[in-house]
Every structure is written in structure tokens, then in C-alpha cells.
Image (tube, rainbow, N blue to C red):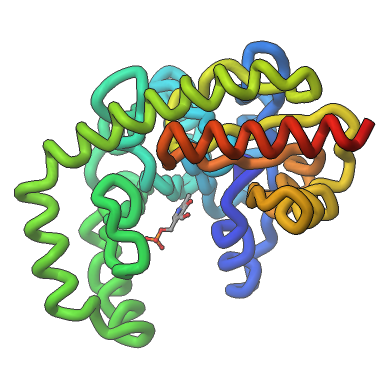
Length: 272
Ligand SMILES: Cc1ncc(COP(=O)(O)O)c(C=O)c1O
């Protein structure tokens, strides 16, 4: 798995008995980026599957089509499955949709794409999504669903179908709003001297930033929420690679983002 990463993706395979190895993105003035050679070196012939979430929660990093080609070719050679968490693919700021392994893989290749209505269609909590997988997997996946949830509720399926058919304008509107919010937040954060932020994230809805002097992100976030009334996610929740960082979700109004920046600034100034 490429980390930092939304923790569920790391923990679920562990519950199922998998051994999870991680390859960390790197952070510098260019922002979050992947060392492709490091990832390829970790994908040894014994590896069963690679989990990639791009655009990424929490960093906003998006894998380039070029890197995806290289990873696909490597995984092909070694018989490694690629499981792509594509839930943020429509929350992409450099084009209509983020690059996807589905665009380059043969339909029967070892590639599974997982998607959700929670993000682009604002249906968080409705518990519905979809997978694209080789047809050879469908019977087994059908059984797994049957023995887990049996099915998504029928009325939620109707809502998802409606969102698919009629939701394009709403998705576009949300992406425009998110991009403006991303830039607005970056402008606000730039006024706080202790904040180190990467250049604008290319996808998802998060800024993953560093604050000078913060080494225990959980303790810092607890104080921030209790003393300043600002709730940010501690970077360590996204794996040890995220320690020292904070995740700020910018899916919010400019007024609320401004108020958050104000509270963070006042809190940091009071720390001396
Ligand atoms: C990378 C990633 N995948 C999946 C999900 C969850 O999607 P769902 O609401 O469909 O379970 C999230 C939610 O935060 C996420 O960040």
C-alpha cells in the first residue's frame, strides 16, 4: 500500500490475515510525490496485491498515468493484483477525471477498481458504491456480498441510479467549489508563519500540512479542538508516515475556512 492512507484500507486486509507492507509518499517543496522505483522494488513476485488510493486521502496526491503504466506493466510481469480505490477520481483539479488503471488495463486483467457514491454524489452514509473487476471474479464477489450484506437497500439503489443519470451537473459544481475552497484555504494558511503546506493538492478534498514544532499530531489535534474549537484530523491516523501532519478537509464554505484559519492562527500565537 502507498501511504499515508485512509486507515480502513490498511486495517481491513489485516483483519483478513494479510501482511501489509507500506511504501510511503515523500513530502518536500514540490508537494507529496511517489518514488516509483521504491514502489516497484517493494512489489516483489510474492506480493499478492497492490492497493492504491489516488487521488489520495489524506494527501491529495494523484498518481500520474505514466506511473500507472509502469506499475501496471510491473504487476503484469509478476502476477500482482492492483486494487484501486478510485472514490475521489471525479474530485480532480487538473482535468475531468483522475488517471485510472481502468483506462489502460485489459478488462480481464488483474485490476479491480472500487468506487463510491459517498464523495462525488455527496451520498456519504448511504452505503452504496460499485466495483469494476474481471468477469472471472464476479461469481465469487457475488457470494461475498451475499454473505456480508446481501445487497444495498433497494431505495438506495434507486437513488444511486438517479445520481448516475442526472448528477453530472451537481458533480461539476462541487468540483468547482472544491477547487475554489482549496485555493482559499491555501491563501489563508499562507498567512500563518508556522504552517508548511504543499503546493495545491491535485485531487480529493484535503490539505495535509505540517506545523512547525508538532511531533505528536493526536495530542495537538485534541488541544486544538478542545481549546480553539477547530477539528482537524491528526496525521498519525493515516499511518506512522503521517505523524507530524494535520489533515484539513476543505469541503466547506469560505467563511468557515476563514474562521478555522483564524482559530488556528490565534491558537498557535498563544503557544509562544
Ligand atoms: C479513500 C477512501 N475510500 C473509501 C472511503 C469510504 O467510502 P464509503 O463511504 O463508500 O464507504 C473513503 C471515505 O473517507 C475514503 O477516503
